[in-house]
View 1 (cartoon, one colour):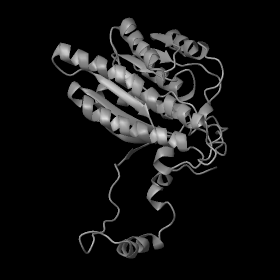
View 2: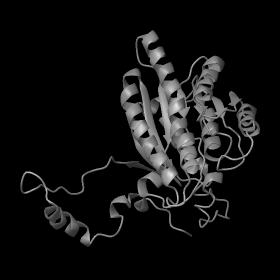
View 3: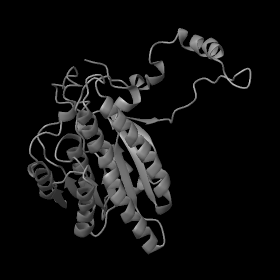
Amino acid sequence: MSLPLDGMAAIVTGAGRGLGRAEALELAGLGASVVVNDYGQPGRDGSGEASATPAEEVAEEIRAAGGRAVAHVGDVSDHQQAGALVQLAVDTYGKLDILVNNAGILRDRMIFSMTEDEWDSVIKVHLRGHFNTTHFAAAHWRARAKESGGPVHGRIVNTSSEAFLAGSAGQPNYAAAKGGIVGLTTSTALALARYGVTANAICPRARTRMTEDVFAGFEVPGDGRLDALAPEHVAPLVGYLASPAAAKVNGQLLVVHGGMVAIVERPRVAAKFDSAKETFTFDELDELISPYYEDRPPNETFAAAEVLGLKRG
């Protein structure tokens, strides 16, 4: 019996722990050969010495289950190392079919306290890291499509966050990076569709090393049920988006957690005002716009994520 991803090669970044690990195992379970990338630094803020251990352990876990996997210990925010990562997949498996961008760090701080380095480092790992791997994967797929004279199977799954959708007061760097990833995804989706490649982004909720503080108030079930915030709830969606079955899903943003998937619409116009004369005056704008917000709750336009919210137990 064939599996959905039989014969395909995948890269998962940040796959040594948490969400990336679950995604790598899912893709392998669906038949893909996997390059497990992780820089291996112990601190969730990107601190500490790089280590091969996390990536090697997940690769060995896949091989022990009968799958194919190799480890890559590299920093995807470095352009050359990202290129080497894509080349490793091509050299090892003959091609690349699936790219899952998951690597990231946190350096949380309020906007008035954040340092330049705290801003730059998070943008670099998340947004530049997504760009770097996407750049080399896109070039690979474009060359293959030109050589074959037709579309190829290419799938990109990027990792955004509800911090972008609803805001996160102590994470201006992280929220900005995750918003940028959505823009990168939709642009990539348009650019690569002609080659048979899709690009989508997910906003996952999962209990990992990165989110241990965020979900501290959500208790793990003690009756043997799967934790609603387990990464294993997110991984099946990644497997689906990576498969031929999702060929028509492109340029989309999906929220996923706890057995729930929600497709997020692109922003829509909530209200429209026209000037009475050639252009607006200050007074006219005050008369039109201020009453619109007078009786509305604060941040109502950014409260979409609350509709999808988990209730604390």
